[in-house]
Length: 292
Ligand SMILES: Nc1ncnc2c1ncn2[C@@H]1O[C@H](COP(=O)(O)OP(=O)(O)OP(=O)(O)O)[C@@H](O)[C@H]1O
Ligand SMILES: [Mg+2]
Image 1 (cartoon, rainbow, N blue to C red):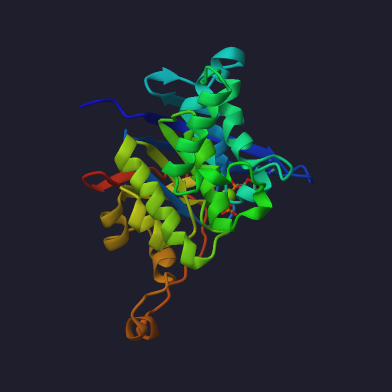
Image 2 (cartoon, rainbow, N blue to C red):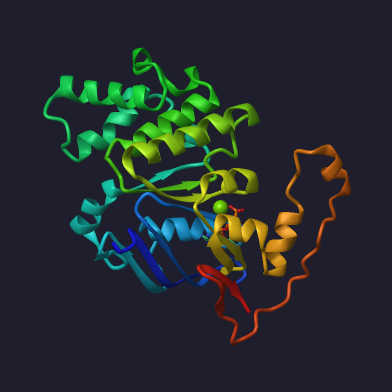
């Protein structure tokens, strides 16, 4: 069996708040993502999901733990070695408008990474590569001289995805990539993520609140609560056989498409309790782990 693309072990990061209080944003998290695999990361606001994304992308330094990517320890890379890693690990943000320069033509925003990493021999080749990326994400390459405000939210997210794809990454960390979009557009963007994965074997760490989308897209899911993973496993196991009371509460709040089921649904509440000092993930069925 080939080794996983990403292996994260005992990752931790804390922050000191304004009042001097220490927040353990990520507190001993371990997970794997295989080549061509999607891990969905869900959990309450403030549970540490985005912090994990930033640590994996090496936008921030972990306090503790190991990150192995494509067989290489990347947790301590700096300088040129870190720069060399960048193309292979990319991010798609929640709000592409915030991350696109409003005064720059969108084609130039997509081209910037290609130029910085010397991936196009000349201006004509660069333009052709950007046009190809536009077509690949379902945008009209005739629009690459336009500015961000001339696009809809869904189109801007496609531009953000084109920019992430430009450097041929192996892994994309997508942090709430559809949350800011109209509901009618969300499924289109999810389908684009799926198509890109089928075409090029990309892996995703997909962070989202929308459990329906996570279920649709993810091969495996990890559920976070206060900096810890409380449950993880194959998507079907977690959604159909949730064991941790927090996961059950989260799933019980998921809207159901059938109005009769929706009306009859019982919401479970989860009363937060401190983790036991010896709490550890235990395997309940193959690949399905629950904190207990
Ligand atoms: N730069 C920072 N300085 C101080 N505290 C931070 C910082 N970044 C994150 N935190 C704190 O760490 C915890 C985890 O934050 P994080 O953004 O990772 O959560 P999240 O799961 O992504 O939440 P959301 O679903 O709202 O996006 C929170 O308590 C947050 O306030
Ligand atoms: Mg977040």
